[in-house]
Length: 480
Figure 1 (tube, one colour):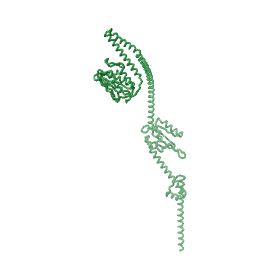
Figure 2 (cartoon, one colour):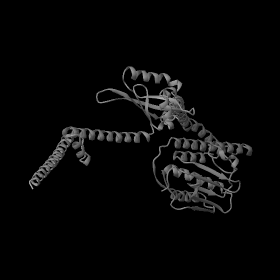
Figure 3 (cartoon, one colour):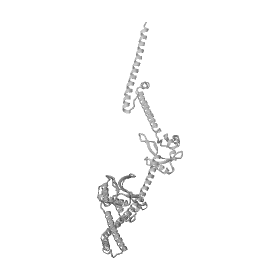
Figure 4 (cartoon, helix red, strand yellow):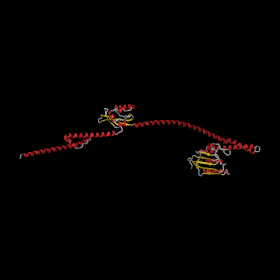
């Protein structure tokens, strides 16, 4: 009976020790967890590394003991985070470089290529593995004409430590020549240690070809500009010569006009006096000596008198034409229909025995010098009136018509007409297309043409022998 209490005491002692161990263990774990949380907060604040509070983070401190286990967990977590960030960074870099169109590479200080982008094959025809197995391959495919430029570039950044852009040609695997834009930069770590070179090569063949085309176009343009400038200078010289010739012709024309005016003055004064004397003496002979002269002699005297009268009329016509040639224009609205009616009425009064049908279109208006236009209409109607004098049922028509989109005035008759073979003489002074059966000085149509010319218009005539004639004219101004 005495042994049972002893066993009970021993059992109680063992139970207390187990409970103490359990308490210490729980306290140890709780303290480790609290220290882990505390160090995690400090690590996040100081180093920017977050520790995941996973079961593993509690187990490690328990196994390895207190603070040393906790520090090991922190650095393990930091290493894991760093490796993960490096992996993400590498994936991003490869994603960018692998899908880029430029040939990029990483060259170590010992000349080993660690990376060549897939664009190498598209740009050069050589695969990335070709470049990695032979790091000098890029040097080998540089065009022979650009070798010196390439070597100078490499020497410059090797000696000076400066990296500049360079444009050179390469010869691809299939023999094509391409232009590349080469750029390289040094790579260093945080302590400034040189880790190698990162290079990039862009295909600029199309840009270079465009530059060459632009350069050729510029040269061609400069050549064309120079050629056209030379032509322009030549043209200017010719134009100056023409202006000088025109000036001389103008001076000559002014001299001719002065001579013409002097001649007109001479005709009007010096020639008129002898003509009057001839006409007077012929009148005396025909009146006072008619009984003493034979029939043939009287016929001669009449011929002389008629010739001098005709010459006097020609002088009047010539002076009138010269006056028109020097006339000053005064343009106003003019009603040609009213002028034609007035002229037709005057012609009827001078030939009361004639039966002639005159048709005049109403309200034919234009802009011009009224006095000169009256003169032109009078000459045209007088011409038609004269050459229908031997025609039965004579007709004269004055109107306006459109020919090839151009509005023209016209005067048409059914008289004797004329031969178109001599149409070029119609408007020449003193040219007559008919015999002496029709009176006239041959100055009427020349006067009309001069008036039309002064108005900036044109006149033409069409006719057929014994089938009448028509004269069409414009006045260089809009109808109103």
